[in-house]
Length: 109
Length: 113
Image (cartoon, rainbow over all chains, first blue to last red; front, top):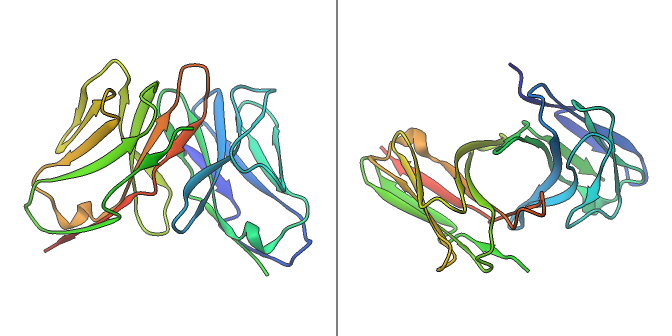
């Protein structure tokens, strides 16, 4: 049982480049989340999807887009990366509890 | 606006000590509260989930309590071990009408052998 998987594990981008972070869960959960974690700021919600076909903004959605491709997959896209988006990104899925993936460390130079 | 605070930010204790980690929240209208541990460079691992109707939950050496009226949850770790060293975070789901969670910034625990 893989749980929540994320790709890639590490990524370095130049300012203005775009990329998509992938997330998949095999637990048949309806809800999925994208967070970013920055030192001293804790985890902040970027977007979430309560169920397949729906997405909603969290606390810090600016500069990001998401796609809930199907029940398993929830991707996060940075259209034009900025240094302020340097962070660790976590995907999570939820039944009652939240289950987290291992994270993607993104550096934007 | 719901705010979640964890104090202290860091804590060092000798092995074998019983300890309490604190999580405070400003709005008592919560749906549930979840405790996690995070090892360096890793994702979050769920420890305990307490529903708003519950007073406590236990798993092994861990016991989490919830007092909504005072806006406080505590995570009690019995007989601490070096392997318990990690950052502990709490997260609050604000109400049944939202799927959003608010996280505290965590307490970094070091258990000394």
